[in-house]
Image (cartoon, rainbow, N blue to C red; front, side, top):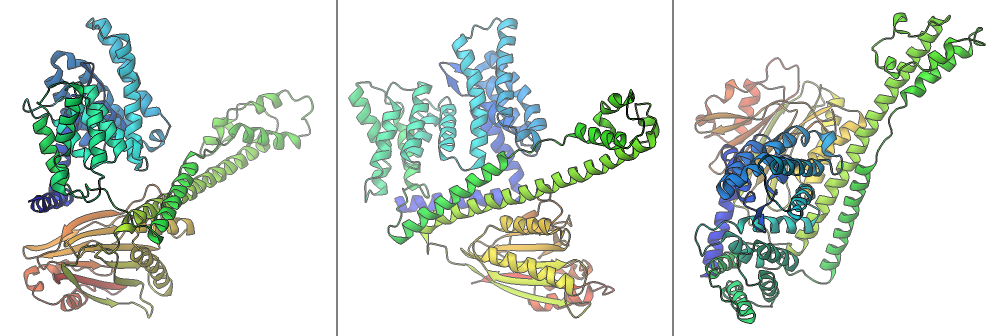
Length: 640
């Protein structure tokens, strides 16, 4: 019975992940999820006073249209749970929305330590003063100060959670969510906070269970101490060889035991505890992971230590600050050079005025004689020196920009390595536990070079955990130079991907390399990542020509041409499209020397042919004038 339930839960989990990855469903689901989170967080209460947890995520910033959906959910929640008392919460949301949209999305501002938490606490403090003076609200001073502090801490907590490196921050965030759910009970005996607490007791570690129990106690929904109940259950689930059937009864049994010890009768939470225990017992990954001992455990510890060192190095580099360029010093140096060779420098009354010229002169595109604010006898000499200082300022500014790019590239690589090593450490005890492939790839490539050395390089190879890759690197131009650039980028990407490096990290590493080498636009990259166990495909594109997916209903264009890698470390990004290829569809990657739109119109007929025949036809019909290298790569997933 438990095995059957666990199988159904895993199927539902895969179904939900599939919905989230579907481009057509992802937007509505994310919108509905943002609305639901805002609605639930607005219910948070301490001492029967609402708390400003709902504005934390809004102040920290959400992408795209999600802030609007989240804000609407919070506004509806404040009115539904608090009626007219929720007007202050609605004011919090209205003030936090522009902060999240205008401030949090500014990379320069969002990196200022504690700026966004300070905005949140200011919003709550100001709204409290307004409501006390306008509506005569009688909120105690202690609760007013608590709200201000919680607003500050909640935004800081969201920022820590986004870094994905602080497990304690994640546990506290979960406890805040349970505190909010504890105020929502669709039925008298079905409190969502207690249900979530029972589930988390069987899924999360002991410290997280303790924090969850503390949140339920603060919500004051039952006189039985839930912190003791959840801690007891988290300890019992660690018993060796505990069957899942017994695990589902742990939350209710611990609650009954604690209720008996305390002498307080309250049976209302029992149905929620039973259902939460049932879901937690069959939840995938809910049982504690048993780490292997010996050499595997030692290697895991070392990987985690190196990952921590990489994350620390990343943090140190991010905290490194650079001083501003002293433009006043450049002005003073120009005046010294001009006056030093002037025969009338002794007793000159304009020397002091010249030394006090504004630094804004250097920001002008070109300084002219009329722009000089002094009546100097050697104005031509002074003008020449100021123009030289302008050139020096441009050089210094460009050098600072290069240094920032280099630092960003190094920080990025430290971040990638830390994430990769931590994931590798987490996967080490599970080696050999991957799913069996359900599909096998059939690949065909046809290419034609304008010169002897072809600037298009296509690679296809297997990765880790049932992953398979098709990579097309197009070196800009033709000839030996383009071929070398494509070979270098393709070889590096192949090594990273075969080692298990995430695809987006591998692509951005190549982008950093192109930036540091000064090879911006030297190569474009098309990468398709196939999951042979599920048939899911991710198509990453960085400056390449559009790709095509052949369907029985017709061809579908995948991706659009963009900026090639190497333009910038921080501002340039790859695009990604997610799709499925379970029913015989064909994916076609093309270099910019082919225009295959016309040849793909008869999609149903092409799907009947082998990938090799399709690639040859595309090369023959889409070659054009032959002024550039042309390559067509076709892949289809067949049942294994």
